[in-house]
Image 1 (cartoon, helix red, strand yellow):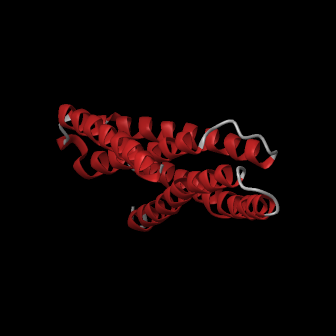
Image 2 (cartoon, rainbow, N blue to C red):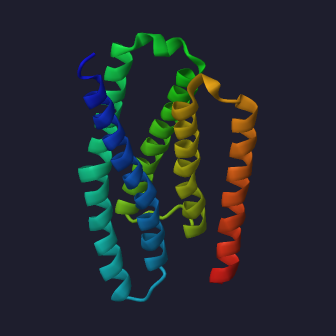
Length: 177
């Protein structure tokens, strides 16, 4: 247990870098998709550059950070197994599971873009990008408040937060057009 705070610190560091990658990669997807509508040679130059940027971000920062965040998180659970019986931890692990699914789906989107297949609009990617915000807000409140959390307030707060994000995205689309 004397190393617990070091393990916790490393977990937090890698969670932050994991989220940084998850926040930025959809932005690169947006830029890549929007570049596909540009005329050549600008289109080719931009799309080639965005592929390089996406690969470096994803495989050098995001994937390693996700693996290390999960390892250090599991290590903390091994050190404090009673957490597995607390509601806040069960809910947090549920959100982590959703984050892993999000990460994997984002990986498949990257693979599609690398092969030149564009299945999603830039507007969809803007909404996709906000899923990480919802997960991050949920996990932070769960971890900080632990069992003192009001599940009703968390649910209402998330609904308001998600609605606000969707409104801002819609407003941005109008402003942009």
